[in-house]
Image (cartoon, rainbow, N blue to C red; front, side):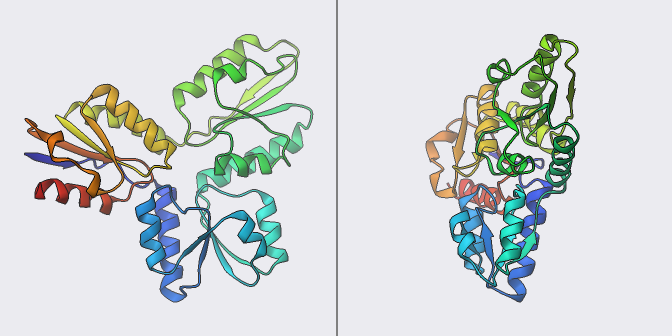
Length: 283
């Protein structure tokens, strides 16, 4: 039985950089905290914990003094930086460059057009979105769908941004709707801030899923990107199974299969997909 690991799956550039920064810091000093899970994959978080990294939440972060804390790729609001400076906390900033650029744009537009509606298309409560809203001191409006976009005030100016990992199709649906409903003299402007490395995963995963009899999709339970890509794979190939560890793989999934594809989310480490491949070979 042929087994192929999707070369397009695995960590995106931002996550890869964050992991490398964590490993580099841990080589010299095991006393490293991470504000939130460095990546939405339990196995990778556990691997880094064995090297000494400790994951903390924002409540614990506020109590830290004279410590070293890594900021993950998702980014943080300005308040996190202010608190760190006040408490003598050294920050290892691993914010993704794409997210960092987006934060700067949101902050600039908020200052230039304080009376406009600054709208962020994204997942409410997601770490990246929290960081973006923080650039506007809480004034930004978060919408998660086209239905929520319909509730905007089309008699006022609208500036639209997107969380970097949202669906490109969904973003353009929102853009088209606002264009059609904005009422002059109100103006509508948008900035396409979706990361193409992530957006391209969707067509790639569909092509990959169609090429194999069985798909093993490897992803952490907390990964929203993983759930989205898994569903896309399952629509193309009903014999798609999601696992978070090799132990979850079941032998009866492969009956009659001549070809198996292994793929994953932007938060799935290559080593975990390779471990799943080895588990299948042992079966």
